[in-house]
Amino acid sequence: MRIGIIFFIGLITLCGCRKDSDKSECIIDYKIDSSTSYSLTSTRWKLIGFKETSKTKIDYPPCEGYRVEIDGKVNADYGVYISFQDTMHNYNNPEMYPYPYIYGGNTSVNSYAGSYEFDYANNLALGIFNTTELCHQSSEIMDFERRYYRTLKKVDRFEINHNVLTVYYNSTDKMIFVPVE
Image 1 (cartoon, rainbow, N blue to C red):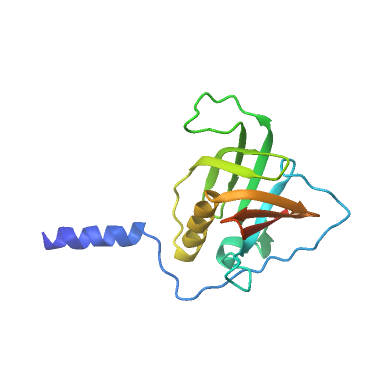
Image 2 (cartoon, rainbow, N blue to C red; image 1 turned 180 degrees about the vertical axis):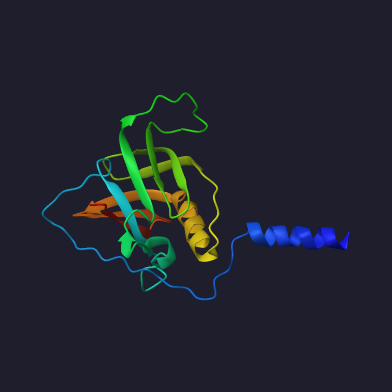
């Protein structure tokens, strides 16, 4: 019996996410581009970070999930992305897709998709979404991903100023995105 319990605890340890000892934020460089106009639906957006009114600085993502080097080069495909389709879907499942348009993207670990709608006053509603359920051994990356998913459920409006998409949640807190070039 004791061996079975030890094996079970070992199995949980192997399959769980490991807690990292130090936190490293990855500051994403970007420039304001006033020469180009962007729209919500024709752009793939990359998350820069969270800016909550109760904090003085942006909460950037963990570097491990954004700056992955392959053969000495930083792989630009890592990070948190979102895209909004501009064509209406024809899924006949109002519980799963309550809104007429589809959005989706990926995080450093998983992919996700759901439905959305917006109006010309920049109100934004995101429906329940599906996600893959892979686990990374870094708990810092998984915590950031869970925070992102929780925040998507609270989104209420957006604005685009030049090449910066600001998505608001809890009325005044925001996620900041820039276009993927």
